[in-house]
Image (cartoon, rainbow, N blue to C red; front, side):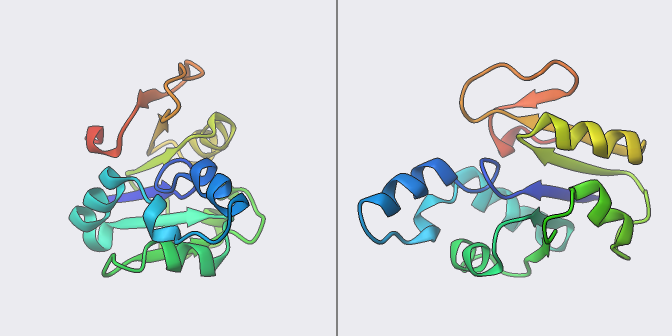
Length: 139
């Protein structure tokens, strides 16, 4: 089964990276959550990173992950992007994101999609989706 994973605050500590950049240069690979590395490696070809982040940032951050599929949304919502991507046709899959509004749009467009909200900040989820704190909690 395919697992779609958002980049910012799901795989990558964006806030930590931004803070480090304010102090000088930073290696993006140092800001990938350890559980994300393990999850991406275990998912192999079934793990897909989908984000509006630049390709350069994602590639630099995930340079040590083999067989990575990366989808750049180009500013579209993730639901709109998936509607035009030929690799997904509405089959059962998992989608993990920290933004409940993205998950709401995805769940409305794709009923077979299991949407999971990740909260790495320790806050409660918005209540509409299963909440996890780490990618190691994925089914």
